[in-house]
Image 1 (cartoon, helix red, strand yellow):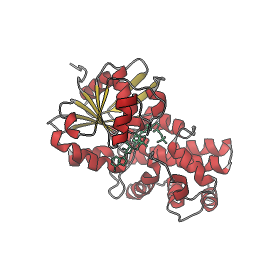
Image 2 (tube, rainbow, N blue to C red):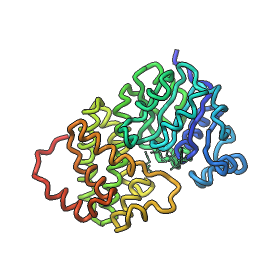
Image 3 (cartoon, rainbow, N blue to C red):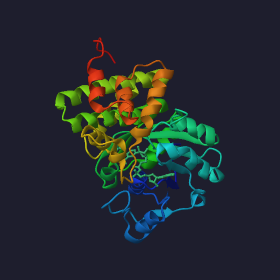
Length: 334
Ligand SMILES: NC(=O)C1=CN([C@@H]2O[C@H](COP(=O)(O)OP(=O)(O)OC[C@H]3O[C@@H](n4cnc5c(N)ncnc54)[C@H](O)[C@@H]3O)[C@@H](O)[C@H]2O)C=CC1
Ligand SMILES: O=C(CO)COP(=O)(O)O
């Protein structure tokens, strides 16, 4: 009962995929890491580092990089970690090697643009024979990969599978908490990225600590309202994958989403803010999808809407801030 999985594979050798492969080695596994770029594979093989996406972290020799999805065929646990907008294509590429009941943990934090689908909805469409789970929570890749302590949420509607995944990944510095609320874990992870852009804008514009605290608090109210309307439990939203990740991402320049926001707040265009970046700021793509979901579920999302208007070039930062502050006065509630 609840034995650990034996053969762990990771798809996507960005910062987080690489860090999660490292986590699995901390837990005693040999890991196959599927990477897209030949230079990433070469860098891990030759230098035991991922010079492109996770600089200056010594990686375990138990990480085996490969380009070939076929090398994942004998894995019994797959962690899927591409940018959210590439999850569908990634799972399609994996499809020929998926046996019935394969456990696939969705570790990306975003909403698919155009369909407004969360990652588990995409999994169900593309790989209906797989069993899905979600990993989310406050976890900057470089800290996790260096073995600094982190706690995350593993969510799965099958409690036994959830326990098996948690047991497989748990290590001396990585502590997964179990949950059955997959929608909550996914919605928290995706929406906090949009709100981190808002906090970054405030930071870049020099609006002060009061504004920052107000944004986190009202941002939390906003993301909880939408997540609950989508079927999440409010309890999940006050946990690691909700409030926990929101606080982390909104409080550190390590966050790519917060950094993009800061650049916008300082007056850059989105194009300028993203120029030359190899890493992904998921909130940029998730913002229009979040706004769409707000309309679908009839949930007010003033902060996500303001961020999206700025990202789409429909409003400048100053006008967006004025519009937020001049809204009718409200009763404070989540
Ligand atoms: N970096 C972090 O600290 C954390 C990231 N995440 C999530 O993990 C997911 C992946 O982010 P990172 O690993 O940070 O990526 P990254 O920003 O370090 O690297 C970009 C990734 O995108 C991949 N990519 C680029 N074009 C692609 C395409 N056409 N098809 C498939 N993949 C493509 C690259 O191969 C690379 O793996 C995101 O959803 C992110 O929100 C979650 C927790 C922590
Ligand atoms: O999700 C993260 C930490 O939990 C990483 O956030 P960024 O993608 O904004 O860097």
